[in-house]
Structures are given as C-alpha cells and as structure tokens.
Length: 405
Image (cartoon, rainbow, N blue to C red; front, top):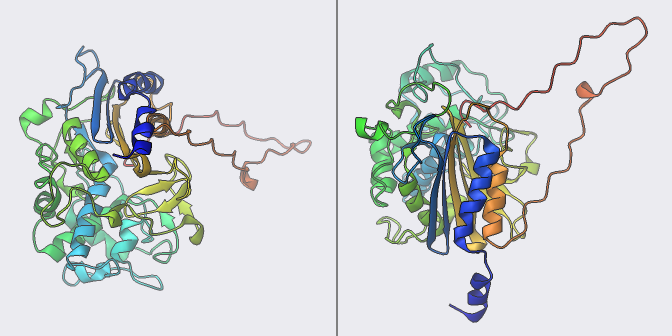
C-alpha cells in the first residue's frame, strides 16, 4: 500500500459509524425491519435494525431471509456476461433465436436482442399483467404464460431506441440464457455464480427452515413460496451473509477465484455503461435512485464518469420489501440495504439516503439535489374562466412503491 493510499484510508470515517448512519435511515424510512451491509477496502460492517416482524422483538440477523426483488436482475446479467465471455451467446443475438418452437417474437423495425432486454430497451411493457387473485408474490407469470403472451404484443418502441423499465423483459432474458446453455436457468445460475461464490442461502426454492426466518412487513404479503417463475427479474431470496459475499465479488474482493474467470472480481463488462440516456428518444422508470447518466446490463449509473462520487446502483422493491445495492468503485466501497414496510407506508427515498451513507463512508461529497423539473403543460394551473366550474384538485399522495422495482 502506498503512502498516499494509506493516508487516504486513515482519513476516512470509521466504518463503525455506518451503524449510526444506518439508524438514521431506518428511523426516516419508518420500516418494520432493516439490514445494512457495507464493504469497504475488504472490511465488512453489518447491522440489523427494528424487528424481523411486527411485535416480534427480534432484531434481523445476518441469517435472516430477504426477498431481493429486482436485485435479481444483476444476477441474471452476471450470468449473461459469463455466457458472452465463453461465446455461448452474443449481446446482439436476437431473442427469436431462443424462442420456443413455432413462437414468433414481435419486431418493430428491428428485432429484440439480448442487450435490449438487459438494458430495458426492448420496447416491452413493465409487466405482462396481474396474476390471479391470491397468487403469491413473484410467482407470475410462468414460462408458458409469458411465451403465449409475447407473439400478440405490439412493441411500444423500436428496440434499442427508448428505455422503459421492464420486469418481463428480464424473465425473457433468463429464458434465453436457459435455452442457450441447454439447462434449467436456476441450475445455470447456481453453477456459474452462486456455487463458486458459496452463496448457499441464495435461492428460488426456500425450504421451511429458511422461510421461518424471512423478514415480514407490516402488511400481509402472503406466503414464502417458490419463485422460479420470475427467475430473471425478481424471484431470488438471500441473506445479509450471502449479500456480503456478493458485495465483495462486485468489488473484486470475494476471497476466492471463480473458476471460469480465474479472478475474485466480477468481469468489468457486467458493470459497464452500454447506453447513454441522452441518446434515447425517451427514458422511463430508471430514476428511482436519481437521474441516470448511464444504463448498463441491469445496472444504472449516477453522475458523470469523471465525478469521484459516481455510483453504480440497482434498486428493488415489492412484497413488502425495499432493496438496494450501490457501489463506488474508485473508493472500493459498496452498500446493500433491505427494509420491510412499516405501518406508515413508503415516505422516504431510501435509495438516495443510502447513496449518501455510501459517499459519507467513502469520504466523498453527497450527490447534489436534482434541480426541480419544469411542469408539463398538463400540470400548469390556469386561472379559471368566469362561469366555468373546475373539478377540485386531487390531494398530493405519496409515491406508491412499485410492485417490482
């Protein structure tokens, strides 16, 4: 370690201060329970806050079971990059190549590619639709349902030209990887990522003992169920202990080599920028944690590349959970957070709060507040004309938590 690097590390806030910073996030969020993992320069901090379930009196632990929700997507793209690296697939492969026999994938000027699916630019909607009443979270739609649905769709935009956050797109991506590798996707994910990293509690198939440790929110979110059906987008369960391993892997400090990569670090291609938002005709649903400056393979980048506070992040939400990963590679620090809904609902942007915790622990300035957006013509108030009655304005409501963020 060089003198300059040693001085830089010695001037950083004590990693234990993450506990106080996390406590502030927890209080502002109004959550039932929360877990926080920080990895900085190989050092790890973990803490649980609140309760595993309302009234339990038990603090979440490193072995508590969590729903990762849309953090599942960055596991899918980890597998994607590995299959690209060994030439099993290419990013510009059309989805049609991996479709079931006699199934026609819709096109609009150009076909949907694997890269389009991984960057939310395939022209697909956010969801296929709602499952039947009483369907457990992250169990709809299944493989047959989505592939029967797809041929009848008219793409909203030409693939590659606009970004629209799409959960169903990532389920199709996992289907394509399954087809290319000629094995079930959960087996593929385990072989290529989970088993080599010894992430034994990360699964689509929680057993009874695991489900007994799943965090519960203030609402009735239904059973802890097998979630293989949404394997590409949102179905993974995990624990803070396993997510500590994952953060180390993302930072290049997992402590063991991944056989097919011969390195402890994730392939940098998995976290790279593939699309600059300004090159698209539109972008929607990618700004939960802030205005994107780059779109990657599941990942979203905040702030320009030359800004030391730049962040690579992925948000998640649903089934009573909010989940988040943020990385600042120059400072070799990453944060994972999962929180369950409290009785007061969703009132605080936990993603932006976590970004500032990350940057504080990195010794960097926080992300500056975004300038207020100019109202569109439809939202500008006008002086009513005499004699014309206008409907009363709707009260301001809190932004609802997305079903699958």
